Image (cartoon, rainbow, N blue to C red; front, side):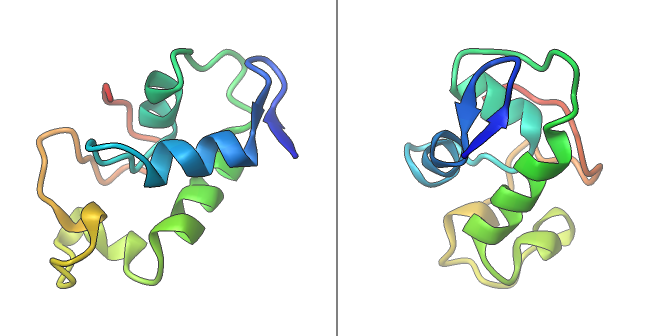
Length: 91
């Protein structure tokens, strides 16, 4: 399913950006950066955030305040992590 019409990104593209590779992807801007594009109209940001939360599992929302599940790749404390729902940081 296409989730971003401006950049023609599918839900599979978003999941691959979240689950693949070495960097931690926790917000829409990081997904855009990992996929080599940038936000245009922003209408897809909520859907992308929902896909990220689903892909990262049950403690995805706890990560900004310190995820207790250190075995998860999203639990790493990195300087790009921001608590805002649509925080902007580079991949």
